[in-house]
Image 1 (cartoon, helix red, strand yellow):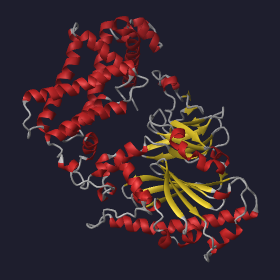
Image 2 (tube, rainbow, N blue to C red):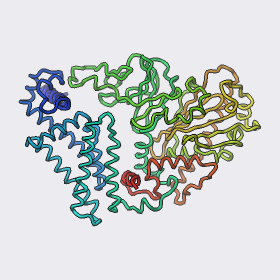
Image 3 (cartoon, rainbow, N blue to C red):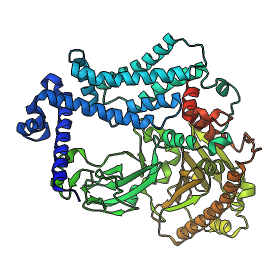
Length: 596
C-alpha cells in the first residue's frame, strides 16, 4: 500500500496534470495571451487559488505545459524509434510518431503552433522547442545519409531531402488546424511514407528490379506465409472494410448485445432504449478490460467486470465506483469509443477504421438480385457457429471462390446443381449461381431435399430452384437458398489458423416440409464443409513446396480466384512481387510499389 506521504504526493501530481490539461484546452480556445489563470481554473473546474498554489505564476504554468507536451512527444518518438533498425524503418517510425493519436489531436496541435509562434520572441520557449527540433533534424539527416551512402547523392541534396520531409509534416500539421473535421491521419502518414519510399527506390536502397521485374499476376506463395504481410492485410484489408456482426433479429430488445473479436480489436454491438443499434470498442475506458462476452442482454447498463465502471446503452459513462479518487476524469470525455455501424437489409456491419464507401453504396449493385429474399425479415435459424481451420485465411477463400472442383470434390452439390453452375460478377461483386439439375440424384440428402422442397410464394420462378452466393470483400459470403440462407466469414487468427463464423437465418415458416428441407439443406452443406477442409489442408501444405505452381487457373471455371487475388494486389501492391522481400521490408516495398 502507498504511504500517506506518497498518497499526498500522487494526489498533488494528479492535480498538476489536471491543470496542465486544462491549460492545453484554454490555449487552444483563447491563444497564449488569452490563457489567463481564471480561464484555466474554470476549464479545470477549480478555483484560481488552486492554480496559484501549484504554479507560482502564469509564466511557470505555460512553461510547464510546454515541457509536458515536449516530454510526451519525446517519449512517443523514442518508443517508436527504439523498435526501428534500418534508416528506412527509423524514418517510418518518425512519421508514425509525428501523427500518433496521443499527440496529434486538435487541441495539442493548436497549442504547439501557439508556442512556436511565440518561440522567436521568448527564449524559454525557443530552448524547449529548439532542442527537440535539432535532435530530430540530425536524426532525419543521418537516416537519409545512411540510406543514400551508396549513391552519388551530395550532402546538399541530403539536407534538401531531410528539410522536405520536415516541411511536409509541418504543412500537414498546419492543414489539420484548418480542416480538423475532415483531416485524414492515415492518409497523411501514407503521403509521407510514399515520399521516403520513392527516395529509397530512386537511390537503390530498394532495388527497382524487385518492382519492375519478376512480378506475378496472382498471389505468390510467400504472401500466405509472411507475418509482415499478414499485418498489412489486417491494417489495409480488414480494419477499413465493413465486417458483418449479426442481424437486427439477433438483438431485438433493448439491451440485447452481440460481441465481435478479430484483427486485434474487440467490438460491442447493443440496442439502445430508443431502438438504435450502437457499436463501440469493447474496451473499458478505465484500464482496457473487455466489458462483455458473447451475446446476451444488459437492459439497464453496460458494466465492466473489472472495477465496475458503468456505461449506458448509448456508451456514456454514468458511474465510477470511488469517484473521489478520479478528480481529473471528465465523464463526458470517457464514454465508450464508438465504431462505424451500418444496417443493410437487416444485417449489421461495423468498421474499425472510418472513411471510405458506405455499405449501402458498395452493395447497391446486388440489391435487385436479392430483393425477393426479404433479408430484413429473417430470424436466426440456428445458433452462431465458429470453427478454426488450420490454414491461411486466403486458402479458405481460394477453395470457396471457384466451382471447378465441385464435380470431383462435392458429389452432393454436383447432384444438386452441378450441371448448371456459373461464377460471375455484378459490378465487381462476385456472384455464383447454381440452378437445380433436372434429375433429383441418388444421394439420400439431395434426393429428399428436392422431393420435399415446398413452394415459396415470395420468390419469383427463376429463384425457386436456385442456390446463389455473393461475396463482400475481403472475407464474407452470403448464401441464399429457396428455403433459408446463411452467412460465413473468415477471421485470420495468425498465418496458419483462420476462425470462420457462420450462422443460418430463415423467414418464419412453420410448415413441416420446410423444416425437413432446412434440415437436409444443412446436412448437404455440412458434408460440403468437411470435404473442403481436406482440400484446404492439402493446399496449405503445398504452399511449402519448392515447386508450388504459380496458379494455372481455368479461364472459365476459376475466375473468382483470379478476381480475389487481383483485388488484394490492387490494394497491397507488394503482393505482385514473385520473391519474398527481406525481413522488415514488406511495408516499405508496398509503399514503393504503390508509387511506381
